[in-house]
Length: 370
Image (tube, rainbow, N blue to C red; front, side):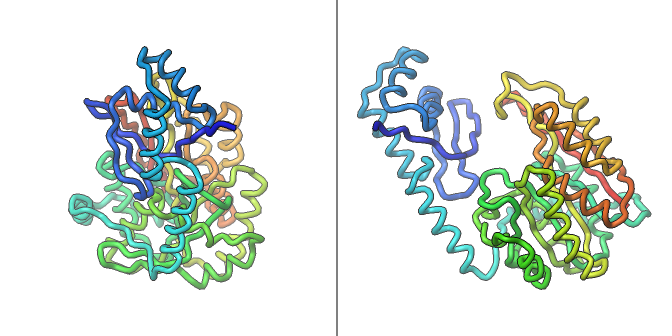
């Protein structure tokens, strides 16, 4: 049987000369591809043989490649761990073992981000009510600067000792619900994980929710809230979860188990759902971008009233056409908030970021709950 090589997930950055491939896990080196070589790259989908790739590339470009040229191209990708195969999976296991054996997960940030958060320290949002939970974005803080400023202004006033962060696994997951069991280190500062909670919640699941280290390797839905927490004057502990379960009843079961442990700690927790809203345009598989605001606002209205069943069903019914990435994470988040007696949310920010180079748009929000 002929080999059918398959690419794994990676990010693509358009360039005037072509495209740059960037690995979200920082395993592979960046690679530049001309427009023709990038087209060839897209044909390596796990369905086509070398002969199929050669034939399809000829139809699309009029360029005849030899089998050897295609094979050498694929070998170069393999050397850089860009194929989904045994070699890549072996590398994943090596990375997992490194994370398991390390004392903490280090999150490196550059000086620009440090300066931005230091700037936020002197900015305050006039909210006098006691906030118990938030929905925040995980888009680039420089893109959503105003929204992150408001988020940090609220975060500075949080008095709870532990911040529970529910994130979205963008690139990898091995179990439907996972918890990072180690401390974080940001800018030389250790952010402790609440280990007593980790030990108690592990016992309630029939799979190891702390085994999926690799999902947390470069997951920005977790890293951004941890980074901002590290800049607080008062030290906080964190609990970082990733939600990939998509079945409502199973999400309810997870929420029930979490609540059993949460209630043992008697009010020490602040809750964050780290999600973005719609992802539309060429970058996300659409023919062109369009305005998702009507869908976003309908979804947000359900969230403000903690109607997570209706919010979830609304996205299921339209097959989540705008690719809201918080569907599962938010459902779990609200199952917990409702049980804790939270009734209503307030929308602080709703914005859209359009990227002209890729004709793509991402929307995001900041919502607080008393």
